[in-house]
Length: 112
Image (cartoon, rainbow, N blue to C red; front, side, top):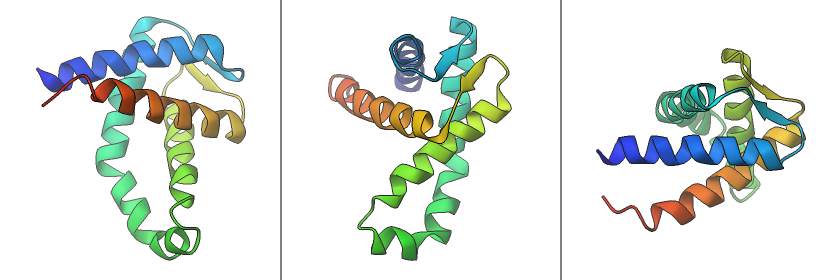
């Protein structure tokens, strides 16, 4: 049940952020739900592999390279989903940072 609530919250965040952030667009709520699911799957399976292989760069940059990895996850999601569009890397970076902060704030209220 908790996973479903988090996916729905992420879906709502994707729709809201697409309305307010320049360079990001989503066609429908159904597409936003697909974006939320694909992001969850990418963050579960692909992100740990990328973090492992980029660990030296992440340590040298004191963890700031993780922001780049998050932006790459958004760009991969853009590539995989037709109704979701991100114009540039900077837009993906801004979208990923704002989405992460909003998810963190909302997860404070949704307990396991």
